Amino acid sequence: MIDKGIIEASNDEREAGLRADYDALAEQLDRRGIDIAGIKDKIAGFGIAIPSWGVGTGGTRFARFPGPGEPRGVFDKLDDCGVIHRLTAATPRVSLHIPWDEADPADLRAKAEETGLGFDAMNSNTFSDQPGQALSYKFGSLSHVDAAVRAQAVEHNLHCIALGREIGSRALTVWVGDGSNFPGQTHLARQFDRYLDATKEIYAGLPGDWRLLTEHKMYEPAFYSTVVQDWGTNYLIAQELGERAQCLVDLGHHAPNVNIEMIVARLARFGKLGGFHFNDSKYGDDDLDTGAIDPYRLFLVFNELVEADGPGFEPMHMLDQSHNVTDPIESLMVSATEVQRAYAQALLVDRAALAGFQEGNDALMATTTLKRAFRTDVEPILAMARLEAGAAIDPVAAFRASGYRAQVAEQRPAVAGGSGGIV
Ligand code: LRH
Ligand code: MN
Ligand code: MN
Image (cartoon, rainbow, N blue to C red; front, side):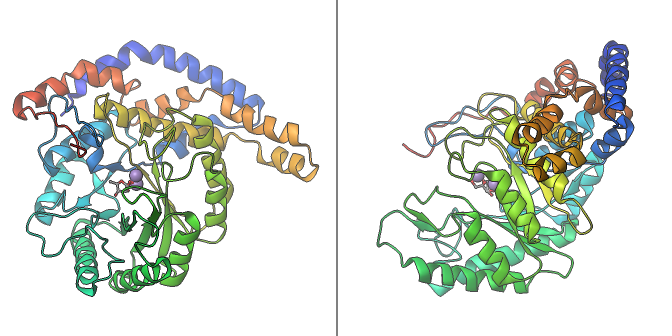
């Protein structure tokens, strides 16, 4: 774990500068009629979940280059997630993926207690075969032509719910890779009907206080057609299933140039925005670090979230990205901060002025109103929220000073690189 003294020493070096920057920003925002403390409180209360699979080095179809101290299993992953939360105070929950993170619920609870974490949405995996599994998902899972395969996939999802119940989770996220690689390979309409029927069985097994989030993705692993390929299909699913079924928006799962913030506005308007997987992408589902490519788009998504905020509006916020050339802990800390930054910037939008410009068809001033908020450097707000929570003003600097990676590398055996799935 990270020693308290390390964080304090790191903060001591930076606190005076932070206080000066914070006071200057407070004065600037005050002139704009904004109370900085109110923004800081909202940031302090805003958590982003960490995907358990994000703390290990990712890989592509071509290769994987593991780093030192790769987590050996779910308990090491929880240790790493604990470090991220300790240094950022921004990531109080972890999202588990089953069967990757299968473990005794009592042990999971104990480890969560030790690391100061809770559990976010459960994720099922019917997109790959597991050792000893009776039937293969090669040709699909919830939409497979064989009822026995569909039943196996339903059963797995019910198992995820049962495990999740024991560790305090309140949602199940279902993403399937089902689709086809050739025109004609599948009957597009019947395949979707089979998916709906099977997913209704999962929904029927959902505890009363749970939500079922379905996640769409345009392509991959299926490269001709995908059963749950876009937000329209996802919305249909949520409508068919019922009130506690909602759509999950993974930012990397859309065609390039798709207006994601508009999708967010639509789903929110009809009560079907269940949550997010934050990441960034340039070409496809690149799983790049959140805000690394297009921070303005992230801001525009949060602009819609702030706009839609109200009673009963509770989308879940989670990262979902793959780290290939950075230390995953560092990337996840920076990414969680980027989500908070977009939120803080969106809170600064002068909504009365914006509405006025929209009503008056003043496009230039409307967009300038958004830009004004986006251009505000809110880092002092984020850093002050961290300092007040006992976390680090500069999480990456404190992490590097702690030597955590070298320490765990001594306990966790080195992992050999691999050539990826392609060869
Ligand atoms: C699919 C996805 C989905 C999976 C995760 C591992 O690309 O985004 O959320 O569960 O990656
Ligand atoms: Mn995802
Ligand atoms: Mn993805």
